[in-house]
Length: 221
Image 1 (spheres, rainbow, N blue to C red):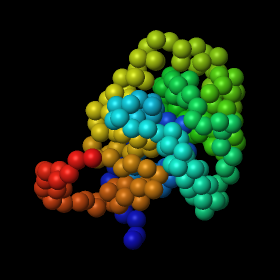
Image 2 (cartoon, rainbow, N blue to C red; image 1 turned 90 degrees about the horizontal axis):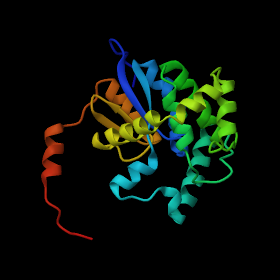
Image 3 (cartoon, helix red, strand yellow; image 1 turned 180 degrees about the vertical axis):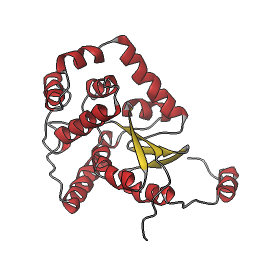
Image 4 (cartoon, rainbow, N blue to C red; image 1 turned 180 degrees about the horizontal axis):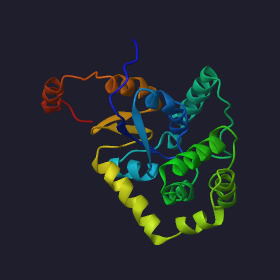
């Protein structure tokens, strides 16, 4: 299908947590979204908070899913020609990384830092739960590393990350990566093609969807 370019940019919110290798994979598709008129807004959210809100376990917390996830990500990285090393351990604490991303308030620098953090984790195998590593990444991105780290420790940033995560939950976000456009959600690195089709004008039958969702459950587990 030929790409149809949109008239003006459409805001596409990218919910991410660098703890997810799929968020890293999705970040590699951002140029495809922007090429047809999507304007990416980087929104850090705490994956653990999403899981808790929806009563879920993360894939790394279920042995069979953890094995599958890393095999699957390695296959996708190989297919895309991407280097893949993975962090020293997983899962890890991503709070500092998320708070530092949030503390970068300008869109361009936040994008640069967020992408660098994900690449450092999944492509270079660096420990992004280590503040020294995060500060070095910030320095590599041309940011004032010590100042950024200090800002990320402020109570306001901690409260904002929690509030942003709660807002995402309220909007229906349950995992990362998720893209939101016009209130519609696209979850997973493997659904970028659906997002691209949406941006090009493809829509589902909302009345049919409403009818399906209104049907009762016929069994309980």
